[in-house]
View 1: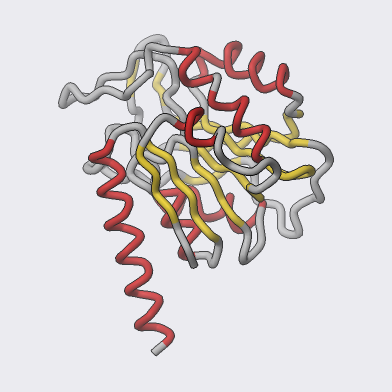
View 2 (view 1 turned 30 degrees about the vertical axis):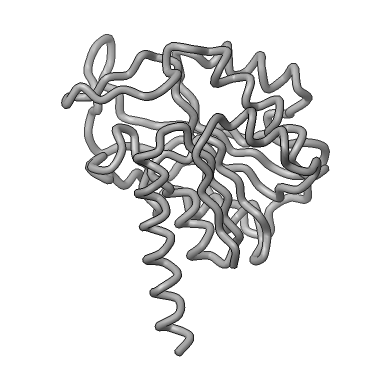
Amino acid sequence: MNHRIINGDSKTILSSFEPSSIDLVVTDPPYLVNYRDREGRTLANDDNPEAVLSVFDEVYRVMRPDSYCISFYGWNAVAAFSCKWQSLGFRVVGHIVWHKPYASKTVFAQYRHESAFILAKGRPALPANPISDVQEWTYTGNKAHPTEKAVSVIAPLIKSFSKPGDTVLDPFSGSGSTAVAAALNSRRAIGIELEKRYCFHALKRLAGVEKFQKRLAA
């Protein structure tokens, strides 16, 4: 399959895509919380709501009619994300929570979850095998990226909301977990990432998947 990892601004890059060319979007955008991890790493545009939210204009355009977008989000910026999605015509049709066996932060409460909205463009068919809206979390260690999601977290979303041969887009690709999960499950992966260092890492991961699949087929 012709998988792609593209370095650059997602809104600009997606503007060159054909309308209705994407079967599923699974993405983990900056949460708009000025995140900084213990090593001092930050995320591009995490302090710039317009730069992040405006990408969804193009996301909506390139999605085919009657399809899904699954997006993680920051709970303290939920109003901004929700207003943007609804203004474009997305319908919120579900919500998934991943329970963490540890607290990633303790302030007013222990932060022990991640969450994502299931957004529908039009009236997509119901999943043949719906997943639970409460999932178990797998911690990656965030070695390659400050907010890296595990492939095992992303893969059930791809399997439930798309079919083999579909094209899966992640416009905030990071270290490429969505692309890897798509490739491992016989979907075509397109990832777009602003920071070049993460694109290189994602390409290496995809190359490893392709090498593994060739060995299996031999």
